[in-house]
Image 1 (spheres, rainbow, N blue to C red):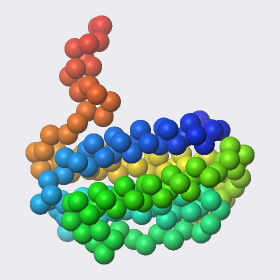
Image 2 (cartoon, rainbow, N blue to C red):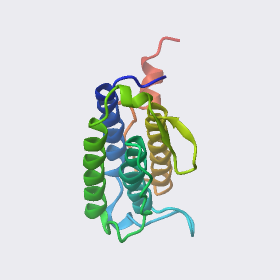
Image 3 (tube, rainbow, N blue to C red):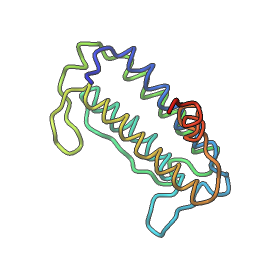
Image 4 (cartoon, rainbow, N blue to C red):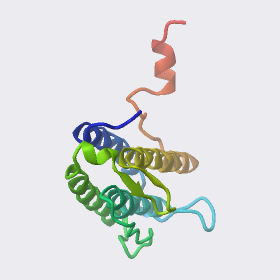
Length: 166
């Protein structure tokens, strides 16, 4: 699906981020730096990574500038509240940058950190896929801790089955 209108995309992007925040808010503050195995991203790492890539990689590249991704370390934000505040700030800055794009800019080509030249609209679509990928990790990690998670679209699988006509 080609993204042809920046305003419509930004509305959609906001809904994507709201769903990510809904699950991120289930992370207990004392587990923000928990991970399921040594060397894997912690909850905090995942959230800092999403925030930093949105702002410093995806938005920068979409504006035809090189990536300035600073990593995902605790020096960016340490502690549950600080991590969520960092996400909010990076999202605000990224949306401000992306809102400056015209619909025509979406057809221009940007250079990804891997050196690929792709249309900006495809790069923004990749940003959505990246967010969904890491949100799924957060859901899984919360499940490993036995923490209930919100249904992604308002209904659980059981509720969808019960409402379905078989």
